[in-house]
Image 1 (tube, rainbow, N blue to C red):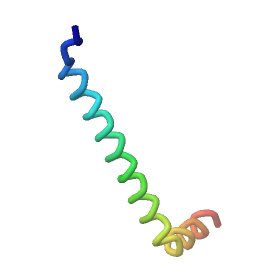
Image 2 (tube, rainbow, N blue to C red):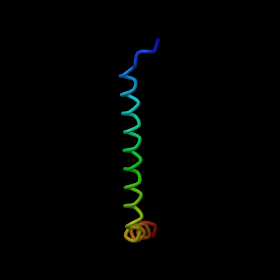
Image 3 (cartoon, rainbow, N blue to C red):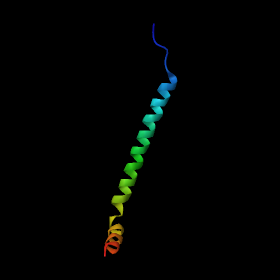
Length: 50
């Protein structure tokens, strides 16, 4: 006899995977934003170091 499906557990696993994918996309977006504007950040860093 087949086991009864555990829908709640399956839903939690899908939600976890979706959250992980969303976090990965957000991290990539932040990294891309940091790469796109390195010049102004380096200028402010050198001013604060002096």
